[in-house]
Image 1 (cartoon, rainbow, N blue to C red):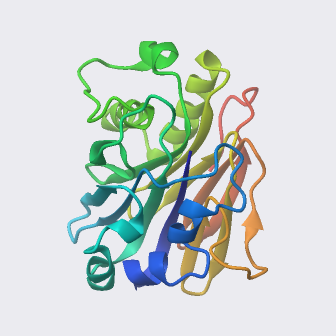
Image 2 (cartoon, rainbow, N blue to C red):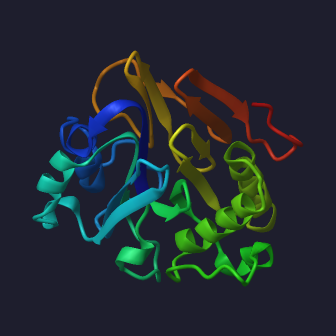
Length: 246
């Protein structure tokens, strides 16, 4: 399993977002407080942000954050108005490699999966012209999202539709997705935890709170969260819904 977060707001350093919170990703990798499935997330980590021209880029590594001697300097020097971070707990049988760590990047979009999917069951949804960068399930799911975005489906619609389509063929899938394009964060709950906090500076959407403050809002299971600088909206992801209004 994994833990992830996304920030959207004023420009902040990765150090501010990852290393300084009292219960940020380094601690969630070892001692997640809300996680339902597995309890260790030390197989890899990554941080993604956006370039001046809107392109999505990511820095990913194998192992825990503290095992990377270059991360503190990188975190202090790298900043952005939209940042996605993740720590990884690999599902049984999945490879331990940088290409399997989130966030995955494509064009102007970042994606992280906190969950698992059955690649065999979801294969009919895959366009074979899209080749996953890793054999892990999260990389496969990323390709399912990229192909929809490349067809012109907006991120706010592509994410919930993908979750419903996967759930229809894989009843045991855990589908907490977190995607961002620099101006919007789109997140889902489907089997795991999620919360968010808004401040005058911006919004954080995360698997679990990064501190003990009381202003974190818990998101119910099977929900869609869309966060912009204007605020946060939520909708049901129940399979009986035909569409989500945003």
